[in-house]
Image: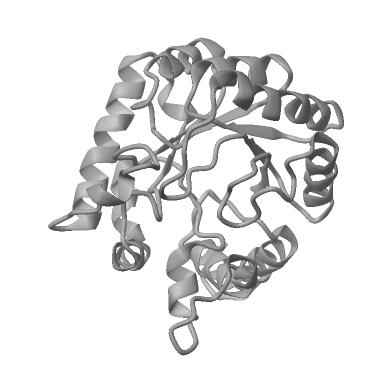
Amino acid sequence: MGVVNVTPDSFSDGGDWFDHQAAIAHGLELVEQGADIVEVGGESTRPGAARPAVTEELRRVVPVVRALAAAGACVSIDTMRSEVAAEAIAVGARLVNDVSGGRSDPQLLTLMAESGLPYICMHWRGHAKDMQSRATYADVVAEVVAELGQQIADAERAGVAPDRLIIDPGIGFAKTGEHNWELLRRLGELDQLHRPMLVGVSRKAFLGSLLAVEGQVRPAKLRDDATTALSALLAQHPVWGVRVHAVRASRDAVAVVQRLSESLPGTG
């Protein structure tokens, strides 16, 4: 999954693709690089980010979704709002990625039930402005499994078909760097939820901290090599998908893992 942030304030590339034509061109470039899905988002969810008005989020994403879908791309809309998801679906979006997992706008679950489209449900404890204050866990993996399990149950109760649900552990959302590493170390424990899993680690702050030199955190755009390393490890798990900013390197890493797995005795 390749990321197209149509925002002025995303942590990794804020403003780079804020112009509609630039965003469309970038989305098509990601498809050329091997993205199976292109995800368009109009709201930054970096820690501390302010939410745009609904009208502004619509202005940002709808023309980009329409153009990419018309060009044949499989487009996911990254939104927590039912109004935005509905408009994006109307112009060609084929998946909805809701980082609130149904907690921000319950009407989004109703929309997903009616649409029959795949729904990505992420572990979530609150909006970007204060989510890091909620990063308190006795056992982060056990609590993420329990809370995400409840979100899945709520989605199914709203009518979302079980085979349309994809989960995301929410790396970096209401979690410290140590929480993120622990989740990645014990990712197999999320398999008990019996759902395909999307993981988004691309360029996130915990990688910048890992790669810091003399106290200087590695800038976001210089974290792609570390992201690619994690894409290779996640492909070995394996997960359903990885959400990345630099597609070609992760695509290549996944291809190498798949080919090596085919070569090993006793593997498919």
